[in-house]
Image (cartoon, rainbow, N blue to C red; front, side, top):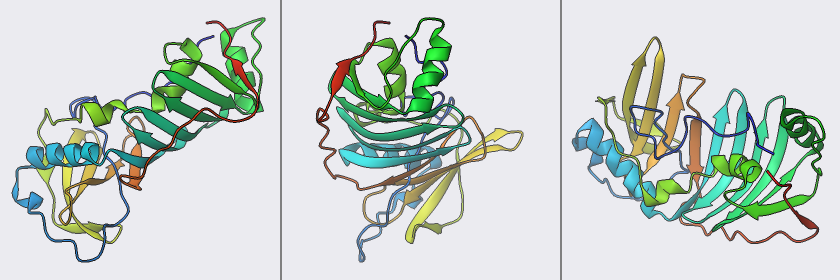
Length: 235
């Protein structure tokens, strides 16, 4: 039962800046953080350093805002836990630990998936579904859990430009800008104090999400859910 229309698109950190660049926003670092000098580097070097610094944090909470999607997910290289809401389709909770995936769909989303799957499809709402990461439905639902960004942080492959020094969430930052033309622009805000982390991706394109990041280094602690769990329907 494929999760048609549910999979995340144009948002993986493994995509390069020439495709659909993905950056992150964070809460401010502790007061007194020292300047890191990242703003003295080239725009591409700043972009690369920021993605690397986020990956080296080991974990964080990623909050996504997009016209058709809202999500808040705690992520690490092997774990994911949080919620995703799809406009007009419904919402679900998701847990990923290694190759195991659990998802709990609300009634609206369960019905939406049944309609997309065709006649005879049946999917329990409000119950945790379990299966491997290769399962069609669960793979689609877990596609917002971009755990690969910790293993292979993104690197710039197109021209980026530096903007003027500013602040993001109260933290000094340098913006790095990707101009896609026709009004499409993605701006990456990189911390200039403490670790040179990517603080925010601000996008003017509907296809590219705005992402905010917090809780760097806080363990995800993903584990199998308590209560009733059933195996996901066969693809």
